[in-house]
Length: 168
Image 1 (cartoon, rainbow, N blue to C red):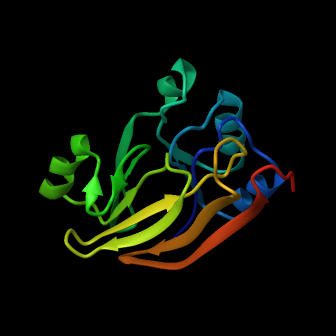
Image 2 (image 1 turned 180 degrees about the vertical axis):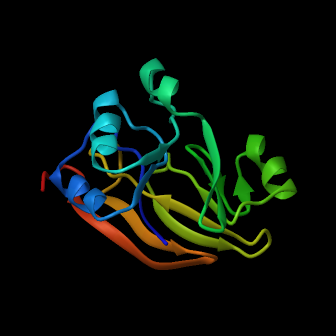
């Protein structure tokens, strides 16, 4: 059983609210636009991190985070990338691979829009945690928390961190 905290689009920002939730997880997954190595290092100091780089991430982040990560957590295959699209309109560069070998869970960030969608055609749970940082057009900072227990994904919660401009 793994307790996962999923976040994205921190854009160089981390605060006590993010850290408080990270401490309760077994693993932290970051779907890109981390922003700074300091944010990545802070998360790593709390719990193990799986992360991908996003379009705003520079060379330092790209040295330690790949563009795509495909891994198994418990008995669920996960594919995480920053720019991935949404069912059924996945990013063209990924669509063929998704059709050939769909993961159980497909995670992306980039849009700053929290979405949890089940793609019935490919049997994929699509997750986008929204944006945990303060940069962007989103109104509320969000993350997702859930448990992967064998084949089951359960206890999914939306975490709201307050308004984009607020510091909590």
